[in-house]
Image 1 (cartoon, rainbow, N blue to C red):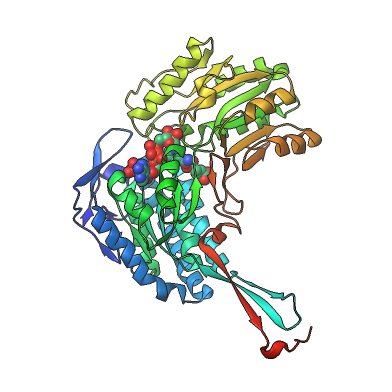
Image 2 (image 1 turned 120 degrees about the horizontal axis):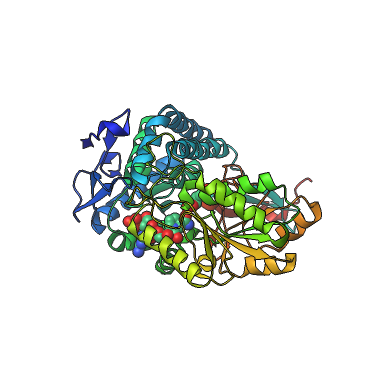
Length: 496
Ligand SMILES: NC(=O)C1=CN([C@@H]2O[C@H](COP(=O)(O)OP(=O)(O)OC[C@H]3O[C@@H](n4cnc5c(N)ncnc54)[C@H](OP(=O)(O)O)[C@@H]3O)[C@@H](O)[C@H]2O)C=CC1
Ligand SMILES: O=C(O)CCCC(=O)O
């Protein structure tokens, strides 16, 4: 089924509004429908089928049937298909960006950046498909060899969030397909249209039926099928730590492999010796990218006492200059938040901080536009332990905490069950490596607030997750090692 959207979205293709299973578009959901809205207006822009658990089981079985043919193709052959997918994503970049801006709400410039980011994972893993290589080792005796093979894990499922509707799919699907696995993806219910569009482009690129499937439905109903079906050998999830824990527990029953990209509470440490302009730009980027709706977004900003007052004033000025507006308006810097629950969370964090003595240096309220628009906010004199320093705010609120010593700030930064990203601004090389080593995080940005790219291993420690995505390591999440011990008959020694 096709559905045409209002012209205001400026989409250049017709959009798909139904799940994609085994090469077919599934028109009817046996569990009703799900509305997709434009967070800028609250208007329903599409209604998509909610599949039943049995329909999702069919998708898993289709992925299982597609596996033998896909895994037996050469890495070079899979590379060609993935490369064609990447090229189609690039060719349809503006359409995809507008779709993302429409259903997720992010500013167009950021949506375009996300499409490029999403495409970079497909291109990267297309290349990696050719480089999957094993090992040949000597046995303890001279008469044998150990051959280590890398084989695809098998059928994988992915559950993805709404905040990066394209990139979180390609960061999982591209390495899975490159490795020879097949996949069933369940996108967030707020952003299924981007997922359908990616599936359509994959099909046009030559990804065979059943190799990449997209299902939609109510998570409590279909989630257990994705995490417990015997044929599924791996689950990959990006989202909240709370849901990640639940999925891990469900998957434990059939001992599946798991990759988990979960919540964060990224600290930003700005030392007196920082280059102030670099630090201001870095903090703004780390905090306000995607309107603060990012797991690696700076959640709490520690500023050393010597520069605190001037830094706070400059940040408040920069935040006040950001333009709030619909993602599809080209001059917007901060789009609407995803839903009313997100607004409520932001308000609760601000209320808790101000009740404890923090001051609002900029913003602090729902934007005059109303709806889901929130004014970029800077809070001063925030104290460690306040809600805004403990929980992921996932919104445009930047809390500033004054610190005196390196030891003190490292202890505060590490006082969290999360360990995803951290940022440090300093010009002292010795401090750089000392602090980067001491921070409990999977990723540390030094003098930068932007750390995401396809080349780097993305992932967290502690309760921020398991495994790494992107980089040369990302494909290993979809490969099993098999070792074959080979002995010469009668133990005849082999030549060196
Ligand atoms: N680490 C990250 O990248 C992200 C972190 N978050 C954090 O989580 C908070 C809440 O956001 P939210 O969107 O609710 O995040 P969730 O973790 O609830 O959602 C992420 C994905 O998990 C799915 N899901 C939710 N519950 C289940 C379930 N029981 N079984 C199977 N799948 C499930 C969602 O489906 P559905 O959409 O259908 O509910 C969605 O596809 C945010 O404020 C933020 O703090 C959110 C998004 C990304
Ligand atoms: O916030 C997230 O859900 C993780 C994606 C962010 C990124 O890759 O930069």
